[in-house]
Length: 61
Image 1 (tube, rainbow, N blue to C red):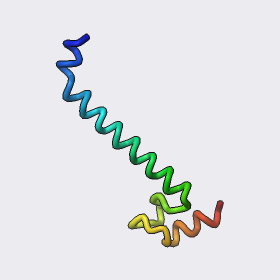
Image 2 (cartoon, rainbow, N blue to C red):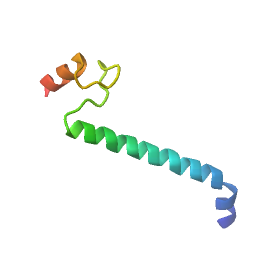
Image 3 (cartoon, helix red, strand yellow):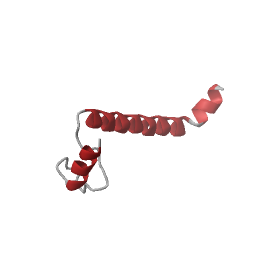
Image 4 (cartoon, rainbow, N blue to C red):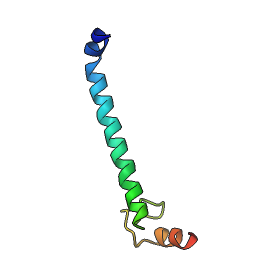
């Protein structure tokens, strides 16, 4: 088992980094949504919470 971990250490480290970035992205999006901000709706080019797409999404709620 230890030999397997040593042989695949690079893959394991990269996988953990990618997983951590994914978790951070999801947490950030959820926080933005809870605060009422735009989390990148289809109408936003820059994630601007004052774009028309976000206003439409806020009215639907």
